[in-house]
Image (cartoon, rainbow, N blue to C red; front, side, top):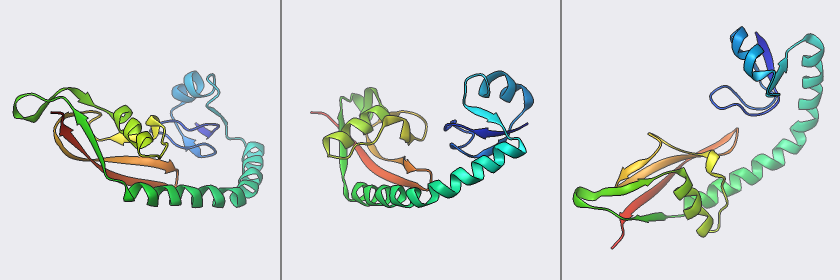
Length: 149
């Protein structure tokens, strides 16, 4: 089933993408929740016209995202967490903690756009997170988890 996404769907695509999904997924989930519409020929023509109009506005958004990415690359984030024996953390560090640390450093990034491989961190050390600022601007953001004294 060919659909046009009306909003970003995780692990499927971004808004205004044309995707192929299984019939049940499209008919029972994506269309009823308003996340997608059928990709008929008329809907594709409307989408093409909308994309032409958005192209100019999109350049400015990509430029802003690139500037933010450059600012993030300059940051050095250290997240303090309580730890026990063998540098094992009490609890874990997640994308929420990374988003809060970025907020304290003056850069606002929503937690849903930050991805840590494995989902959470359970040990002290240096790690990387993927930060998606725009569909075309995704950066690797290094940070460090240190033991709280």
